[in-house]
Length: 277
Image (cartoon, rainbow, N blue to C red; front, side, top):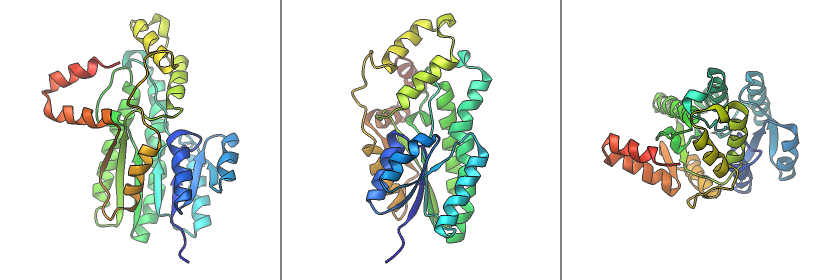
């Protein structure tokens, strides 16, 4: 019997990562799922998943993860799904440089460090898949999400350059760009804005109050929000297709937004984007 294909999935304590880890296990993959907190290991292990600690902000934990996984697999890895991230909300003028750096450490630099450890492994094998869970905000700008948008724009550029550099190696890089997905992402964004933004003394205080109401679940709900299974559907294509696509848009708003950006005059498009809350 052939060995099951192996994959690292990051950010598996909840949301997209937790769903993907369990679905991949169900579909026959050997899954190495990462979380940042010890308390989150048991639930994954109970479902037969090899759960490990890793924090994108801690390079030592990334190196330890890759060494452990490769020691268990005999030096092979078929796929990497970079997923763990958070969204720092807040107007650009209200975010300190330290807060912006923290956003990039988790959403960008840590992803690069892990990916850089895996690329040589896949090159030696002559095959492999690297899938980045980006965001529609890696393609379209959005008010009050400048830090998160910047980190995802950076991820898009780096990943597409890597895809081109790996051409002919048998290793493919794909980006998934979800719109609104059911997860703990919103709750984490709420914590981040309360922790890092002086809401009451900002010129945007009224806008923040409206945003906080929405994030806390008391404001207007997004009717287009999908479950994490929508992301898994395109993830399986990126992992198994003979030639996976560079981009996978998920949710109606994501698809509509990119279409409008292509067909509308830029000034009109950005006016429309400014009107979104």
